[in-house]
Length: 381
Image 1 (cartoon, rainbow, N blue to C red):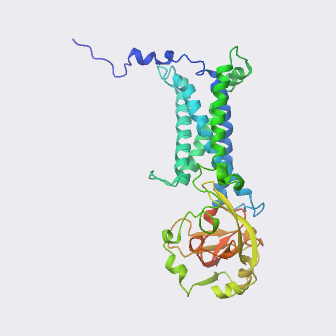
Image 2: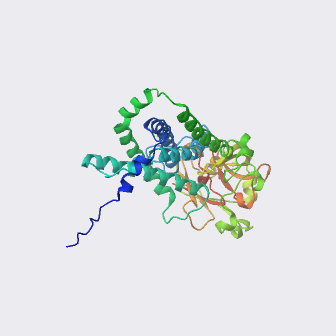
Image 3: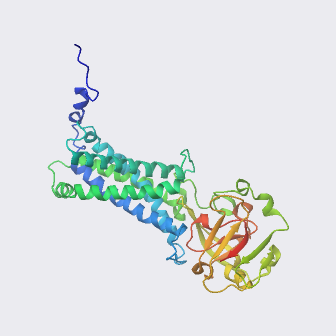
């Protein structure tokens, strides 16, 4: 009788693979230092990512402030640029620990199997967040799901797995880090190389949010000063399908909803109202930001023409016919702020069509997707 091999039989060469990794860099000390750096990076990205999420989807019990004007510019810059800086850290960490991932059997007990499964979730979540994040800032979406939703919910899974992993491994990490090895030159050189790689990523991308270093931002998808009227463009008028409607001489701005009186203004009438100039940045969720000078009419002045006061909320509607961001909500804190404009000019010139001509919203401390372009209606609730 011929004995058939078991389905789970693993060749001895595979079982012996972990013993072939003899480099001192595949040790717990290197893994511990890289793990601590990754932990700081992931938790920072999680916190700043929550800021971005709740600014775009504020809970009913909270109002996001309009000041300081650069708050979102800083938090989103840290989120994206800091996230990119973790890429070399994660690759180095995986290279350091992957011999242990090949150990056989994969689970020596039920408890050990749960820990290994947790590591799988942690590694998978980290790779998913970084890979899809890099694709997102590159404006390439080969995946079938909506990036923002997947990125948001996966962050909770990742951080949960990270916290449990830290709790399990902390005694070992503390003991390993506090013990000074006899020969640390090779380890230090490796860690320094990884740190230098992360630093290089930061140096070549930070200029997308910090204009003085814009020339160094060779890895950034958008840079300050590059684009019509010195400002980058994510969505053009042609891409949004509004070029004809925006150029229509019959364009009107309407204020409607819960108002004392409905107001309709032509572009000439809008320009006849008191004009103000503000210096505000456009900050994109993909991490880039650029400051500009905007001239226009204060939103609160237009709303007061319709008798709007108090804590009303305003829905700003674009000429776009579809899309998740064709409208945005403006809270009382923002529309009462004197820096919030219905902008008509950019950097001393009439708005370019791609920047929202004839009229766009510009307000302090808001994501770029909420600075609605090609505005034609204000609906008060």
